[in-house]
Image (cartoon, rainbow, N blue to C red):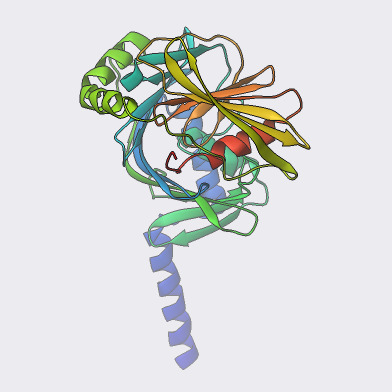
Length: 335
């Protein structure tokens, strides 16, 4: 009799757990995710992004708009500085907008199909579906998947993805081989199949609307630029590479710092604070640096961070080393 009561109690407890998680197991959830990936035509998401890949954590708010098949708008705002960069994809190509500098880059690229992005819902689903060694569990009312990371930064090895019972993203943690969390994304809202205005993904609209919001920031940036230039130094260098020369020059009245490194590899790290301008570039491939995106091509990596234009130039430095050096500059204070 006691055994029967114990068995009934265990079955009841199991039923409660199954009901709390929608009564679905791993294969059910994976099947629903595949269906949702095909059926969802658009979404809006907002999240808090924390990067622990530099000397200091960097906090961002992320706003993502996506409309199938190829329209994207990702706004990354640095919480400390209030500066926003926008990644935009439409029929004209891929744009990286830096509104407070009135600056834009344009590319011809298959981004983001060529690489996963931590803030894109479809990237998370595809990684879950692709990993046949995935681990599935439940935490409270959430479904949790532990899967391999599939990002351009190969230091990122593992990811833990939490979804609610409606399969909306809740939290993402991406870690290195030792399970140190380097990237975390906490979703604050997610809307499936919203309707967008006709010009929501147009470059002109996004630049103009963001410019209005960034007018105080532009004034602060101009005031800051009137002072000393300030130089950023990478916290990571390849083995047997060191700084051998530092030079400050004037180019069209704009100060430019050139850091020259030599050793197993040799490269120049160039930085300058440009005046407000609009620039169009159509060469190179987009590379995800985590805190922003850069342009990689012909032995060069270019990006903008904290109002500074950076360029790494070399004829023998591998692309992954360029990216690692660039990422080591984020979260630093200029000196």
